[in-house]
Image (cartoon, rainbow, N blue to C red; front, side, top):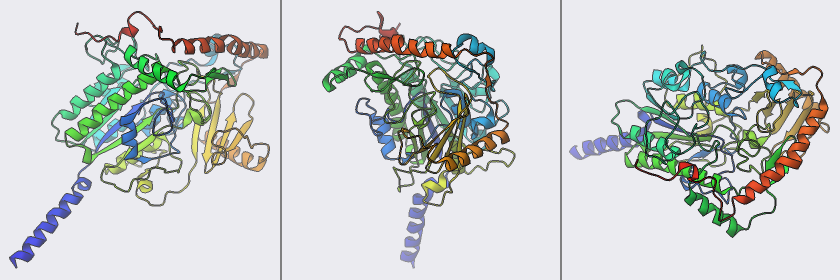
Length: 523
């Protein structure tokens, strides 16, 4: 009898141990990288950048190979992650600070549309931080916010108990090496790297004793411009370019401006490695502190890599375009979710998902119901990761702006294998079958008019339902200005970019006397 009782007790103990992780509320670590392309990782095909820590995470995560951002630029994409809504629902359709209407046209007289106004914060929305706080979580934010111009819209007022470095500005003023120009960052040794600082601050948060589960968001400013690295890391990747053999031309013309077609920027590569080092610091801390087995880890980017405009830093090939563009290079992003107690990891989930799906997914795992009064557009991806049925649904994008990278004011619908783009300058559409043509080289709109019309009508009806704002035409627009601007980009800017690119391959390359202040000192 005693033996039977002992067996029962041991069985219960082992059963409890096996299910213990699932019975507790899970912690969540959300890692968001800025301006980071789908193919900027070793595990997604880059042979130039080195990202061992992210690659290791991805190898043990559910990988959504048709994972999208909710917008081609930063603030709208971040607003969608924070609210679970499409950009046309929350109204932040451009990066906060971008000019609209006549102010835009005064600076860019060669564009024929006046971009409409947009919301400059998400004051009327519930944030992911607030939702987790309501679920009994301790909440933490580190890094780029860019979701409100006034302090009452910064992370500490929008659901996060702790805020390190999050404020109104979307790029690191003063650069990536301390001292930093940021009211939510303290003093650090001169020359300390920002990605390392944010990672170490997150590590310090993880080390503190906790009576609650945590939701921690590490939102790197990297790899947004300015593109900066240390001399040592630049030298490592300069040598790599030399060993691989530099190609003659690194750019070609897209519709409005040059676009990078090769990954060989040694400064950007060093910057990517610094960010990956930061990811390693935090993931190692989870293991060291015994938190890894009960911590969901998300890794994603706010949109595609910068191939045009800004720093012209990377190439997203074979995907077309990049940040600011309506094609896959601007919209497709790394999209990894690690569920440590689910050993049945699928590394090639092909169902299209988007950034606004994180909100309901993570709250689902936290056991927190979303109130019916908070109508989110996203869907929980938990069924997909548990092998259950997940119905096909449309994904929408609305960007009635030009941006700084050469994209077009347009709206997009993805449904099944099909992708339709509606261009606001002349209302023409492009239609692509992304399974047969992932590079978006074969526009089928004229060959398959029925499908193009069907999807265009669906997209326009949805925009009407959302009361989405659209751009207006410039009165008496001079089309010669547009042609002149294209020639300037082709004959002046592109040769200049090629010269700048090749200068980085020289052993004598020196961006300035102190390498952006990256020499670490104790002063």
